[in-house]
Amino acid sequence: MSKTPPVSFPAPPNYIPEPPSVRGQKRPHVASGASQRGQDVRTSRFQDGLDFTWAPRPPPEDVYDRLEEYFPEHDLDRPVIDVSSGGSSPTSAENPAVVSHKYRHKRSIRHVAEEHKKTASRMEFQAPLRKRNTKLWGSKLEEVTTQQARAELSSVTQDSSPGGAAKPIFRWVRGELIGKGTYGKVYLALNATTGEMIAVKQVEMPRTASDKSDTRQVTVVEALKLESETLKDLDHPNIVQYLGFEETPTFLSIFLEYVPGGSIASCLRKHGKFDDEVSKSFTGQILDGLEYLHKRGILHRDLKADNILVETSGVCKISDFGISKRTDDINMAEAYTSMQGTVFWMAPEVINSQQRGYNSKIDIWSVGCVVYEMWTGQRPWSGQEAMAVLLHLYQTKQGPPLPSDVQLSSLADDFRQRCFAMDPDERPTAAVLRLHPYLELQPGWTFTGFK
Image 1 (cartoon, rainbow, N blue to C red):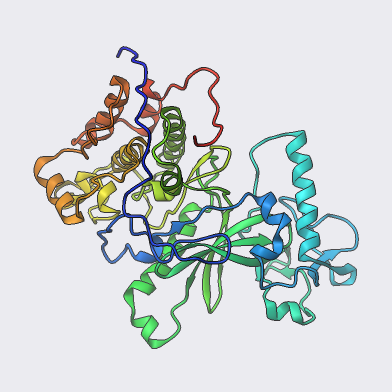
Image 2 (cartoon, rainbow, N blue to C red):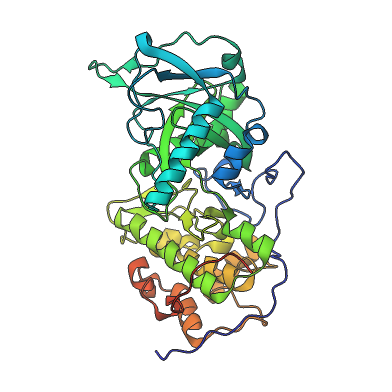
């Protein structure tokens, strides 16, 4: 393939595919209800509660500077966090001190947050490596609520496992809403033991007879449990890191790495379609993350611009694994036959899955759809209803057509055609597609934001 200079795209209009309605809320703003950018075809295993709309997220340093705005329901200066009067600092990243009752004293949420901010700034200055979050798996988790903050805490800050080993306790504080689905919500949160900024995805546990008879709500809870088990051991710079899991009589919670910025979809809505180099950079990162998932036998099954978060530095992270699946053989086409995902990003073999089944190549089709979004500023099949798209894919076996005002270089078009090959066997793997010459960035290029 000969190299052709990339074509400059026309000046972008605002991102136009059915944006979700937004109502004014306390900062930061969040879409009300589940994403309306796509109409989902679901079996009983795919429910609205797993399809979150992500709002833009402020940088952690802004949150630390304005804690009152993001944690308005808490007395940030009341001493409520148990810490040791000597020994390890509560901001120790991987091994927080297990504190005995004898040497206990308390610090405020603000104190712990400010201490972590200083430590993080020093570490970034000394060695600007990828930030590592404290893993919470196997620990005891306690939410600091307004009611608890008003009373003296009587519990000691250590717990014993059946074997007698000390079990670290992490206390966390829930802040403002930053994402929302039909059943689940995502909140900004603070690991009050270490001072780290995190996110927590919560669904309500079915408690009433009506809740327990609602198969959709029950399925969401079951799916979230499966999601946490599938993803707890993943660790990759282009995958949102899952940190922990907590089940109470009221909520089921998954603790996540906090990614400042927003989703690719929210960036498109704000800035319009992306510069070609930005599209290349983001696509390469998505494929890096996807290759990592596929090597571990995980199909994402719902890749789209809404489900890829972008840090302000330009680092992309695949998120929202609500309908992901783990398999022993990622290449076995007969592994799954249920129709899962969002229609406009859905590979044709998923629609006709009863005949042959599908494998990891469905994620490659979805990568093509995400790149389509970045090139055009529109969702795939813009202006068409879900059923019309299903019929089109079934009958004509063609991918989404490009708008007339978008012209691609020969390399970009070849990349598109490889993603949208109707025969999944002809689509490259993520590892192979990552090496496509279209994705080669200009020498010296770095992400400096959206223009």
